[in-house]
Length: 403
Image (tube, rainbow, N blue to C red; front, side, top):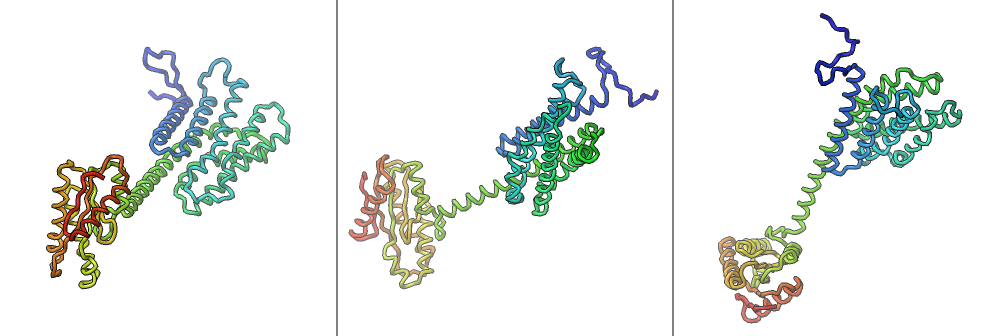
């Protein structure tokens, strides 16, 4: 048995015996579901990325949702009957709202640098001027000048949107490609409607019939464009974070030894005060440079860095042949660990730089520090002890129990 496609489909359950489903109702339901999905989609991504264009697109989706309800056969109560004045106000208000927020959405949505400076401010608050002309659509006999003002604003908005997207396309905007496709349907319907209103002086009878599929096309393609934009934004942010981390590492790392530098060890000190700090200096290092050259001197410094970095203390090169150590072990173990590291310096240099004819020794100034001691004060105390180690014959640790 053949069924006519024009006939409504009756519900086949006892739960809704009186329900009648027509194709316009089905299409309306699909469109409303699409808009609800768009709202949820925008809200979820905004919670993650906090992009402003998602807020504007949510406002647009809400305006379309309310417009679709007003244009649909859905019951809205006695006050909003299909032919009522209130329903007409509802429809025009949300249609104009959807148009008005398109400017700010476009300004926030397109990539930076793709919107000309002259057009950028025009996409901000000026589109909302259209809301001042909303009453003309529900007037029985609107003033000609008022009606002309509305048409001028609508044409200006259309031209502004087209110009912005076109220029963005010429400037290589990938987002503009999606938006040009998304607005192709609604722009065509919008333009034909304006042609009827301004030139033919008659309403475009198929406007509402074509508006729904045009809006549906826009919502879907804009969703794809937003997803693409968000993926690229996330990639850009991850790349920026990686670059920032790389710059941070470079700014906190000594390029010769690979150890942290003075900035890094000072930050570490501020985050967690150590129990002791030491300054280590290679003895007679100038003689090594003078006799063997700076290349060998650099190898000596590198070997010393490897030796000092091999223990439990945090080692850093703070300049020239000087290093600093932060100890966070038990206070009773500091002296023994410090002496082991100091002796390890000579052993590592002898192994890694065998061309040296004489052994290289190191002097160390070590000091226990109180919790409230600043980094500068601790370094000054350790430097005093280092000077004492040098004055008393080098190749030794000078250690004071408290700073």
